[in-house]
Length: 222
Ligand code: SAH
Image (cartoon, rainbow, N blue to C red):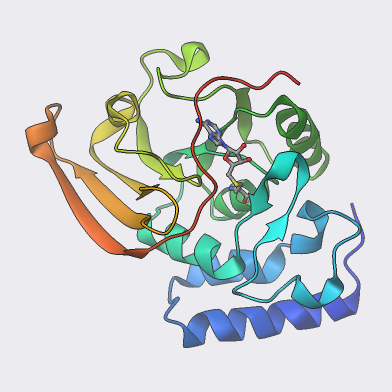
């Protein structure tokens, strides 16, 4: 087990208080974020002061970021998770969001296109005892390793240029996807409900502004 000094526990109390003030009410989510040490997922050189600032994203490897605590909480609450649901996360990154989903009792499948992050985070999650299945890929044409499988929920943690139809096919009918769509300053958070197989049966709800690194095609084997 990695260290979790009392000062970090105290900061997490503050973080959870601020999340509640900003409208996060899902008690299992708040309990998961209270419990999980975010410092395990951040670079060691990180400035301690920003670790639990709910509005502060932090740079990790490969020019990517660990989403700010508020964004992790907001996206996760939008998922309306129930225990044992299957969740596909697109953009493993640091693994923090993945671990939050595991703490909430979801069966988590997570995909990352940067091989450096994929390897590092897969190893970290295993060390911490999380049973998320990690894949290297981009999801634009599905996940070859999981061909035919459909998920209760899909959570996209990078900004998609538009709604990827391939991803919608990986969602169960009756399921929902939370996804930021758009680029630069014009990115919005959407929740998409899948009522049936055809695009005419997909209902979208726009929930506000979002700022995510872009969802890119292809694996990066550097
Ligand atoms: N959930 C992460 C957020 C990481 S930032 C966390 O908690 O830390 C978004 C991540 O999405 C980056 O690591 C980026 O490399 C990855 N990404 C971008 N496009 C992708 C794609 N098409 N498939 C999988 N991962 C992608």
